Amino acid sequence: MVSLARSPWLGWLVGVVITRMSFLLPVQRLRETDKVLAFHHPHPAYPFHVLLVPKQSIPSLMAVTSEDGAFLLELFQVVQSVVQEFGLEKKGYRLICNGGKNQDIPHLHFHLIAETDPLTGR
Image (cartoon, rainbow, N blue to C red; front, side, top):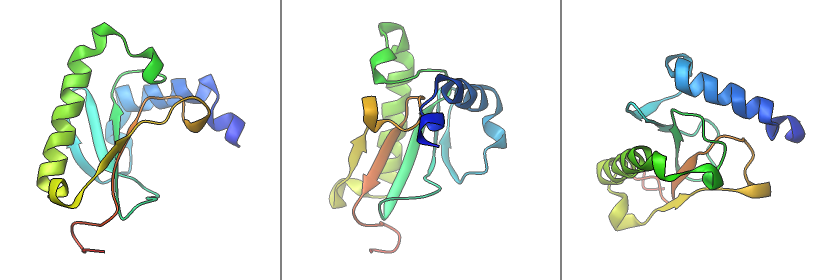
């Protein structure tokens, strides 16, 4: 199963779904722009866990080029708005991008996490 998750085929499929059919994803959307989709992680590993995914096919952080500047700017604007909406700056947060053998899905994505859920305080 892990080898399938890391396969280029799955990366291509995820890219197609995110790029062309993101409206079909059964996720709780926080933000959706032309270039970024942000949603609550369906299987959170932290009390507050949001995924931020480019709506273009980028397999990993190492594949980002200077031509992706508009995406990166929009990504950080979305991160800032989610941090502000949930008051994460005061409580603390992390933005994580896994790579290499630590990246389970071959499509660039970021995890915005916090040790405390700002809604429940837990």
